[in-house]
Image (tube, rainbow, N blue to C red):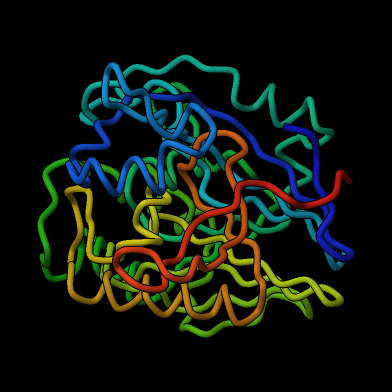
Length: 298
């Protein structure tokens, strides 16, 4: 996708890869799918396979003199991540370079949470070691999320699909002196604030952008698919705290509507971002729906 302009901020998407995920893992309500999913671009639902195109990508944000990389995907050469994620050999860094950014240019790396597909490119393999990929960056980790996964701390919320991730993707950054453990909320710059968005994981967070009269939220895995905007009670597997995840989604929907804000999730298919609107007088009453895209080109 081309770069887009949000106030004084420039936003690019850095693709890692796509994988098929069953929409029926979220809902088999065919009426809801027909009303709220079928009108969306084709990647949001294939009526034959019943899958959607689950996009693994990062957001790159340039604002306030900073280059900020959000959720650096899974990374190459990993093991123990499961189908579609093990043994990747993808040109992620080349795609980053294609938009004019080399690893030394990144000032801030922010992981909304520490599942493997949101922090993998924190590090790269150098011989037998994992070393920081972005050697001049400050890596921001939310305190509650860091403690949840710290393998030297008390074991909480075991997660079988996230093995070795802390030791490969977080600890080398800490040992290199590049990590900053922060509470929420945390101000990065005049335009950027890290805010709590818990539920999917204990310390899941999001990045809020305020630039001029534009508002945007980089929401990580608060939402995996737009159907969750209409029905916040829907989940894919893997939530630490489903009840809190529902409350977070409802709050984000309210805020996005109140502020006419853009949402930039981590896994939506093309065009990968959008705004919300409300349709009145549906069979279930007023209903929130997703309007893809809408921001001007950068």
